[in-house]
Length: 410
Image 1 (cartoon, rainbow, N blue to C red):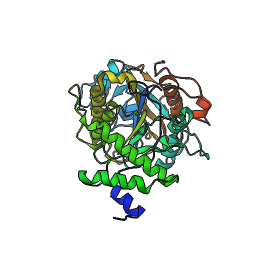
Image 2: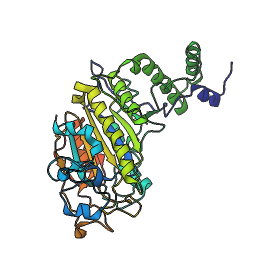
Image 3: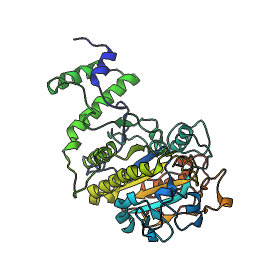
Image 4: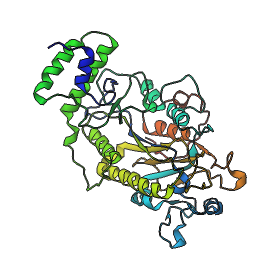
């Protein structure tokens, strides 16, 4: 049987960017020796921080949102906010996360975001994932620069940087590109079990040169073999955790399985879209936040003691306008929120330099002002919870250095 290279790749049927194979050094027990495994969850669409973490203690909040504002915890009405600190609350659909906040494993950063004023989803996401405030000729991602900074040792760790989905996020872009997979089951050769060994042998023989294509093909086969040998799907959900029956829930569960399988996952990226709430915001957030909160709660419960070596962060490209629009929604704004979750987080706090929702304090044409640059949060994460990297290497056009104290050191 003679196959062209196009036919070979069609036969391989690997879901995602499987040919992108980075490396890392393992410790004797199979874990990585460079700090926490970091899970990055990107809320695509511009999540509305003002209704997700409502500042019910700001008198202007309900005035700007006469129909959309989440009622204060002491209102006694259905759908009231869950109190956090007497000023901020959680959207009621975020109830699964309240125990983690109360136990100190969840921190919230409010009025956080990019200083760039763009209201474009594409531009804002691109700049944030590259870790920049303004457009530049730097095209690596902020976490990718960390991966490059720490080097590419000799020992294999093909799943060092991975993402769930068809493509890896820009934040992971670096000199040794990252793996993306839609699912563990789908990351495989499209061949019967009896044909896989022969197909792998033929592929190894076909791509035996030194070209970039040959190297990537060999790395792809290495990844397939590593995943097959580790068999992450063998690890059941633990501690009676219940993931939502959605793509987001499955992706979180499978990231946990990849970590348990000892595949050297250092960073994993997951997307959750649907946050562009120009209209019908109440119904959208009720459903989306329930999925989001249940998924994070299930992941932390499932991983149990392993959360001592895992830190999860969430981010979004921008927030929503401070005032509601005429379609039962909110338009593109400026500041939003971030969250950090894990046993190495100084949780139980809403970290913010609250700018207030007073007319004179609103940004531009009516947005919540950014008072915490998202890069200060990510810089603290990388300095305190990984092997570390100079902030100027991580974020080349970021001058800030003050940390909020969100992440424990060591």
